[in-house]
Image 1: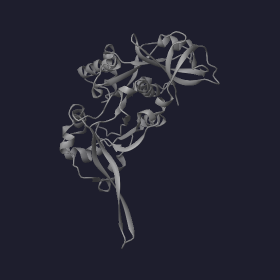
Image 2: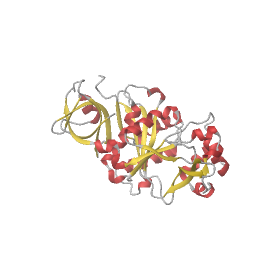
Image 3: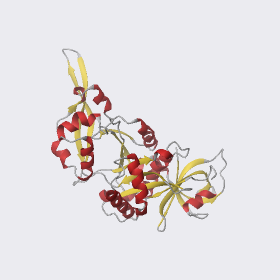
Image 4: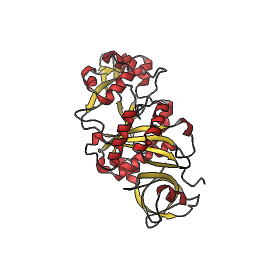
Length: 347
């Protein structure tokens, strides 16, 4: 395959992908993609209904994307969108980082004390997450992680009415060797009596214990050990690339952290996301874009027969809302000359 031809098809995951996605989830042991067979099957069924526009309740809507290598049909990675994270039945909980100032006129000293306070939202944002790439496919020149990250924003831009007016992403923090977490072990475990893994799994289905057991009083960070304080809002090394992609998309650290692991939340107004603002509807024209003028684009199409699908393409935007792309793009997307697509230039 020529370098200008797409190597991966990014598409909506289907229930028939269950076995391959289960293998991917278990390889990486990530809570982002269920490792339980029945749970993953149910997620894929919900995803299929969501893509068809049949999820009346946003909080039940989930959109799972997968990257399929065109030559081998191997699943290289996955990502997802949650329609709404935070309802009256299952609020979105977070710890807000704030500070207050103390000043002594007699001593002529001022101190700013940072503290954490439990907050919640019952009309929460949409959430992008679940970005994973199999070890064997990492560091490929196609940058599969970037494709799986940005395709979510392209989809949101096509279906704004399906999503909340804000979008967030939770970034994973460093973990200890036994899948534990420094912040949880020092704080969460002491107020709930649960291990990090137990609490994380339980919160997927029942968050009542958070409201019931977490203190309402602020937690002043100066009382925490240095290593715990340093872990607040920290991101694990392998997630730094994902943070950069979110920042390029217009998302910023919200001064909110996960109450379990201290991982940071990034977010933005949905309509202010760079890929949403820059998404254009263009008509495809077959050709080989000159290398000196071509740019990388995410090119997507959606129809009732094949669903949503997208590829990364070296392309040239032309007059009259046309986009010149190589023949491989037509083949991968199953389109003909003149087909209308959603296109976003990649950073």
